[in-house]
Image (cartoon, rainbow, N blue to C red):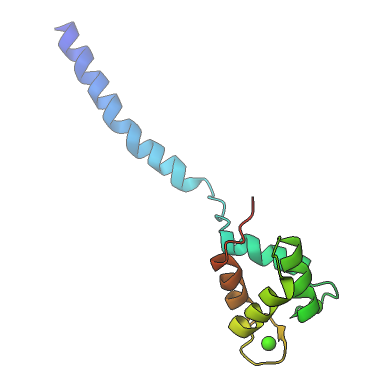
Length: 111
Ligand SMILES: [Ca+2]
Ligand SMILES: [Ca+2]
């Protein structure tokens, strides 16, 4: 019964392939997915002109202006209102997440 045997062999091979592929997939290091928030975070970093790790009002305004905000100072005020937890007039690293969320909610996406 060569036909029947051949069919059986084919089935056995087909059944053994998926686990093998799964093993290969898990073995390959998966790159960390870049979320929109991470991209926005990176963009904000670029606007930290004096590299002090803090976005001051001026740096924020520049960022929002470049992103096409119609009234950058208004956006800046909103951002500081929303994310400036310690009320020092600038966004430090602890407040960065709230700023990113603020920008993200406004629809500042990376194209
Ligand atoms: Ca700065
Ligand atoms: Ca602050």
